[in-house]
Length: 147
Image (cartoon, rainbow, N blue to C red):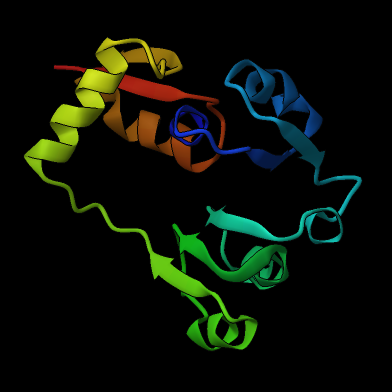
């Protein structure tokens, strides 16, 4: 979200009330309470959707994109036929990177343009627990493992 804001994008997020303060702190422009409202009824003609859930959320997201927009799928299967039908692009997020990308990200962070939100620093032997916290969405931010 911070990288999107840094690049000048308007950022819209869906969340429960327990996450509103965090999202406002990291610069989200509009937060939609997914317990009370359906984002696809409020959001239209966006350039990019970052889909961290897949499934039903992905199915509901196609209509929010403008023609030629892009859905970036983080988990599960990407429904390519739905993307074609909506006139948009769907891409799978991969963990590929190169040293130039990492150097640029490090520079951006070092300049303070984006600030990682570190919620926990744990010893390496607690990596399994850290992963479990992350997968259960019980951390709003980064968990750092000390080596």
